[in-house]
Image 1 (cartoon, rainbow, N blue to C red):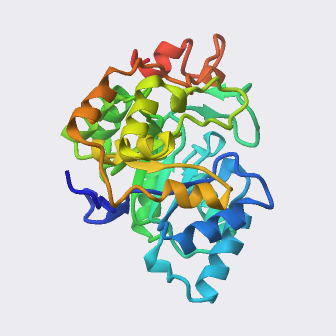
Image 2 (image 1 turned 120 degrees about the vertical axis):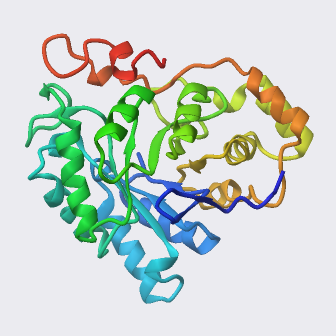
Image 3 (image 1 turned 45 degrees about the vertical axis):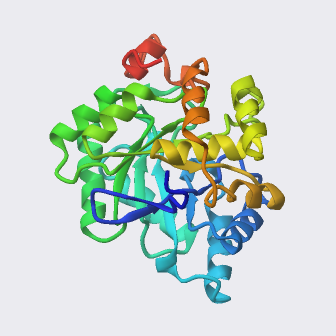
Length: 313
């Protein structure tokens, strides 16, 4: 097993950094510092989203990094996402334009549909679900790609079926599907579908989101994971991230703690031996982010969690 794995090649002839900094739930006042510290450590991918509410602060940190000559724009891979209330075709370029303004950038490397779900324009939360029209939204995303606002397009939280449906109609195919992925939710079926269709899988919550209060996550405490970590002399978090790289997907660990940011980046000069790697396939599987907030009996596209994930739960 090659130890490096610093990048993964994508279908549009670009290379996505294998480890990115996640910014979901990164507190105001801390996320900018985290981005600055991460880039200084060596991170070259910052994963953002308009709904996270922190893109302006990230933009200030990026400008500081550029002004100080730490990196140039072309050195970084910046991802952001279209939120559910901006799916109308006329709203897509406006939303992306706002993200670019907040991030103080001329273009994104990757723009994703955040969820395959739609809410009424101008509303917050999920009490105003309306049916999706992913093909129409995607066509507007393609126009943003054509005019240089983003160099790549993708999706997030799409099942194999939803991704397959999009691939049938897309003029510019999605190059990434960003989904929950960690040793306790290995996405076996979706991974194979993505691989066979040239779509890169990018894993959010690769550590199981241990700091998320509404999730009961014990991914890093699983006996198999902790045993492997002890045998290779690394932390459970490092083993979880390295597992992702060896599985062939990029990982997006989130932290605002500089020591942990550095620790999470120490995954390149070692590897999990084949026998221990095989042991990790025995870990019991359970999705953490089930998406109940998108389920509504009276409106929207999904009457159950099973419908949202097309049975991949």
